[in-house]
Image (cartoon, rainbow, N blue to C red; front, side, top):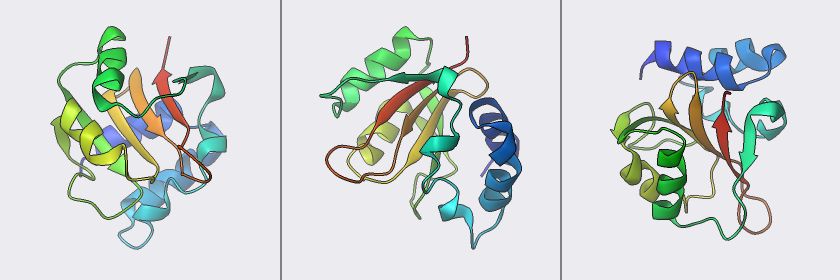
Length: 134
C-alpha cells in the first residue's frame, strides 16, 4: 500500500469533514475495509460525473477514463480484502477484476485529478462515477 497516494486520493475526492476518518480507517488493518462502506455521501459532489447505465463494460469505462486523461496504470483501493487492494495495476485489469464485485472501490488514474468510483451495491447495479477535478 502507498499511504502517500491514498492520502492524495482522499484529500482530493472526499469532503474535508470526513477525510481524517477515512485516512485513519485506511491506515488500520482492522478498519481498512470499512473505509468506503456507505461513503457515497461523502465524495465531493462537484467532482462526480455519473456514468449512465448500462455501465458495466470494463472496456467502455476504460475508454471513458482514457478520454479524460487516464494512462495505462492505476492505483486501487477496495473495501474488501483483495489481491488488488493497495496496488498499482493496468487500468483494464483493475476494472475487469472489480467491476462485478458489487463492492465499493476507487481506481485512481491520476491521484489528484482523475478517478473511477463504484459505490456499494444495494438494488441492481451499483452507482458508477468518474471523479474529475477540473
